[in-house]
Amino acid sequence: MGQVLHGSATTTEAIRRAIQNSQESVRALARRHGISPTTVQKWKKRTFTQDAPLGPKEVRSTVLTPEEEAACVAFRKHTLLPLDDCLYALQSSIPHLTRSSLHRLFQQHDISRLPDLSGDKKAKKKKFKQYPIGYFHIDIAEVRTEEGKLYMYVAIDRTSKFALAKLADKANRKTASAFLVALIKAVPYKIHTVLTDNGIQFTFPPRYRDGPTATYMTHMFDMRCRDNGIEHRLTKPYHPWTNGQVERMNRTIKEATVKRYHYGNHKQLRTHLQNFIDAYNYAKRLKTLKGLTPYEHICKCWTSQPKRFKLNPLQDMPRLNT
Image 1: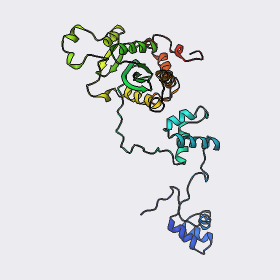
Image 2 (image 1 turned 180 degrees about the vertical axis):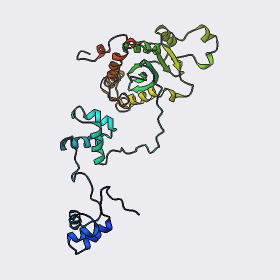
Image 3 (image 1 turned 90 degrees about the vertical axis):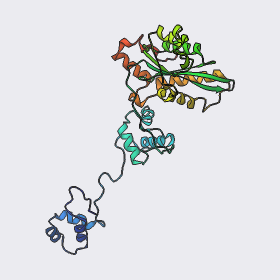
Image 4 (image 1 turned 45 degrees about the vertical axis):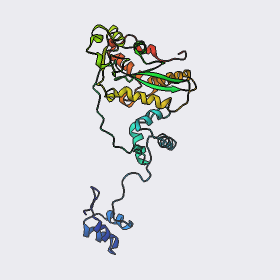
């Protein structure tokens, strides 16, 4: 195989080996090989013929102190969070930390790649079609406490990722309509579209849609949509992945609540659920929003698209009395 030498190298490994084994003077060897005496002296002192590695002898960050480096490495190994999540969590205590410096640090310690715990090949992700702020995905999930079963309504904005979750004792047209009304009140901007599945809480069953029931009656959820100028879209039957954003949010909420903690009563779950949603909306920095929280993204949209808002979103910022 051919030798891979430094771009400015004036000798090959064979010449270097000959210099190291020769008894001639430095000047004679320099004249013989057409190189400088300094180069001859350099290779006389060395015991190897390969190019020496470039860069500093001791690899260390020029941005972080040794203590900050150790904290970043320990945080990555302990949490196994992705690069951006580590960055957002560590920047509060290390303000001068940048994404590139953190990535280089992880590479130096061979922790830049997270272990594949699933073992399955990940499918290529497709990007969602871009919509203006105000497109909500809505779904229902079952949760349980020691007192019994509850139904959790969840909504998430496709663009701002703002989420809302409410618990109900029953899943029917009345509770679904009440959740939509609560969503309209909670959001400081106008909702133009909602996407739901084909459950009876949101629409008539498919077998009744072409009959007299759908002709002469309007579903309660559709009435609330119509009253507020909202377009109601339905997913394709038996295709829950078409409402994937809210399905993923359901899983995130369950992993943070009922799958991790035991609740003695419904009140405990309601309190924890509200605290989690507030933390997500106002403190969780998301990669899809380029490091902004959902609330910060809404405020950014308010400065560029004020006509889409019903009120100033700064009024919704949580304070000591909320």
